[in-house]
Length: 237
Image (spheres, rainbow, N blue to C red):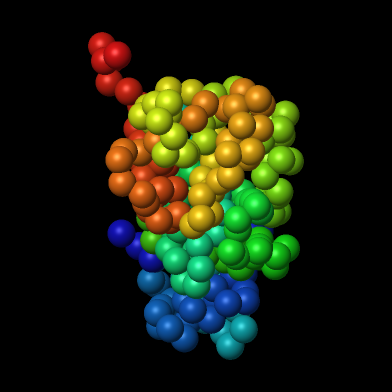
């Protein structure tokens, strides 16, 4: 498979100038030369095979050969709202949710949040999404939303009708696979407060769990995305 490079620019068959960090990576790191084949993508759910024409110090001239539809997305939107874990565990979280096809990620601010996400995480995580998409073959980027407080997130009218909040409560049901647009919310290391869970239920969220063990934030989010991203088998109940 040809190396993939991202650009936010519109793409179409013909000559194209790749600039910035991606051009540097192509020329200085990967050491591509005229005649080599690469693939461009820009988040429009297509990919663009291209030949290297010329390599300069600050740009690379490419000849885009065609536009190829390559839909590797889930069949329905999957939104994950999650408190952030500490350190590089957040990087792992973003990478894996991108690989699993999550549509949108929302950093959450809850009563017990240890990490207080700042607006700068949007740009940081967006860069991680690009790198993960290059590796896993996604041609539509996972959207990183601005950090939201718990009460604002659970009452967002734009969220899907099917919504789950993960919590190890005795009356919680096992998180089921989804077959339609769905949102899931995961709390911080100290867990959501009972008041937060109660307000989510009042806002028409269903309480669900992932089993009898207490999972780390990133483990719970990745496991939930894997479950919800796998449509139920026909004939199962």
